[in-house]
Length: 280
Image 1 (cartoon, rainbow, N blue to C red):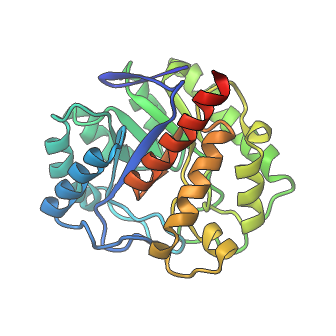
Image 2 (image 1 turned 120 degrees about the vertical axis):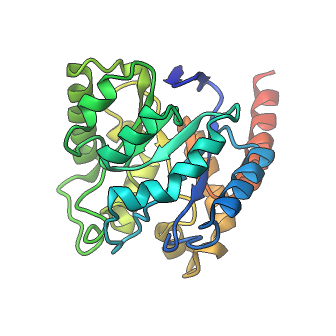
């Protein structure tokens, strides 16, 4: 299983780690920690040293109750960082749901991947991405919008509804001329879901995955983990985050999106060592 993403074709037979670089003052976990360009670049460099396979750069917080950001302000936050890291030999992902921000990044050739929590539903997004033949695309499910998604999420069957939504987005991409080898799927843990909804998706990927496409799990430090272990501080959910990443990979996740790359990398190395000896 290979994923075409910009300058790279990633071999996903081996799970990959996507390191998070939030250039925001208000992210739920590390808001403000890396808000300056200098601090964001230092953090990105450390993530690479720790073993990140992909860097995911985001300028807009999409935590529950977050208000939308203008495209100009979002680009002001991420543009300089993207220009710098685009020369690094690592896939660069832009975490955005806004077509104008995607357009600026693509026109400036500073990204390999568009990671979109809105699954290219913004006006003009699919048409824009169809014009770039090799850019990787992550399509995520979200019920509602960040400002209201956690008010009262309801589903008849969460796995079925996520599956139906992602299948529809895949079909629209293909109809626009986007090759499936560019697509990565994400069930959207924490985006318009209760604890029970999240656990249903995490524990049963075969029930929501519409096609044999690679998928990403982003559960690092999220409230579903806090609810399970009884921890309200996101930065104190590191052990739970590593455990969730390991179990996600064991169940088939091709990419895990995490804050603590080093701990996740070491845990995966141990798991791989066990598996190698089982196979011998």
